[in-house]
Length: 432
Image 1 (cartoon, rainbow, N blue to C red):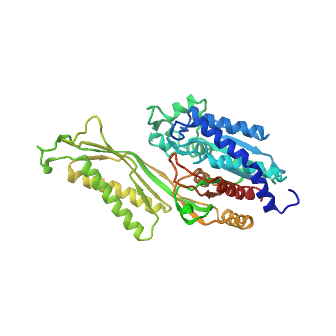
Image 2: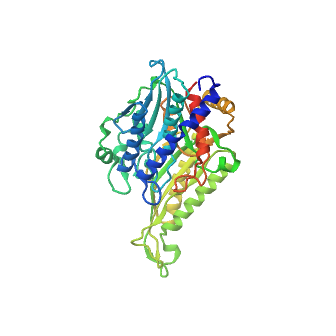
Image 3: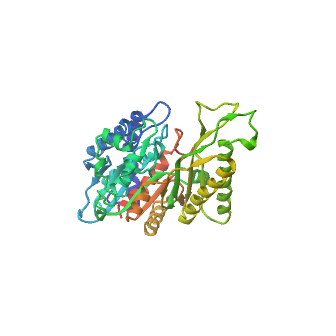
């Protein structure tokens, strides 16, 4: 392949390396299924199985491997100049409960496949290329309490407050993140806020391939997207509205403390404010992902006295996130007084927006043109480990791969041909 132009050599080499990807996807799916979908809970046996299979593949490829104090797996292809800053690529290993096999994992497998393609094409990179499998990115799907998710990346980058180790509580077991990390054999005591265990001077930038988690590429008929930026988020995970349980027929409305109607009014007001901001040209999504009464106490003949719910705001604008957070606080206080209830919104955990590096984006666009891959610029509404690298000061870029049926469900449907194109573009970046 050495006599071929670079684009042709990488295209051929990526195609030849795809059996590695197929075998890893199949093996990890089989090892981590819950019978319906994929459930690689952070710091669980199933997440560890996936990590072990990735490390076994890296060892078979003669890559240098290491696992840090928080369980993050690094797999490095040595470059010509080992003292120079090289690329780091990857994504997360875990999943949401009963999720799909591609969310996160596709980025790690793409990294290994791209490294194999470089070797197959006879390309020795100028500096080291490291593929990283990160732990616990989806912690928000498994842990309540006060925390910001993205456990592995933030811990490695010195961005994880030590208090979150105890305030993040597993919704299944009732135990802390610290306890689960210890059970898995890792070292939560090594979390020191503001001090990274990674030497960021070793890296030129972070590259992350990820399935698109929305419908845009699918609907526009494009296989690959180049991400412009990642929305920030503010989440209140454990909100409650406390009223009073009373008889549904005997108590007049003016005497009730109806937790459901108060909560509905709050949600309606927040949605109206969100619509106002969107109409004014601002970027914003608003979601109430959990809304429930107490199954042990609620009844068709009772005025509900307790509602649990959560709030999530996402935007690329810090001011918009701050506006919606303040509106939630002021509206809940006013509604509580009017409807004779009490709101406890708990802790709002923020994640700042992250802009992808303009130079890297331009390089990806050149690579896509060189490789004859149809792409578009696209923002990411979902959070990714890439944002944590940006917040730590390392520039980043992301490649989206078309994915039917959305994400965070067992029906994720990334096509192998699209994955190959995205991996080809990733390898092109690594070669430059």
